[in-house]
Image (cartoon, one colour):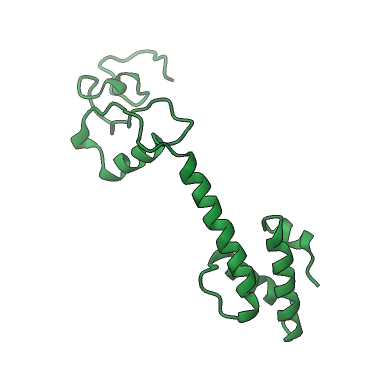
Length: 147
């Protein structure tokens, strides 16, 4: 028989979802499912609450969907409306996905500034941050502060 502690140990959020999961587990157990099969079904609902195969799982799915939507809304409320400005050097060398990721990062409330890294190898004249890169090419052999 599954307990709330079993679910919490498997990463389930504390609160109403635990009680609904235990209710669903009891219903599934009444059909002859063993605990391992019940856990698999509960994990499927947790992973994809929008598509539940069994009516007994619908209350749990609704609660998990509500929790997910609430969490998403809270995160959206915390993001800045617009990304902070940031410097870009060598824009033609930076992949489009990097720019999208940078825009998202600069909307985070903890961001204070940033610049996407230039690909290496590249000269310091093309990308000011390359001058500080431990991977930049060196023109003369000898000891380095970066090693």
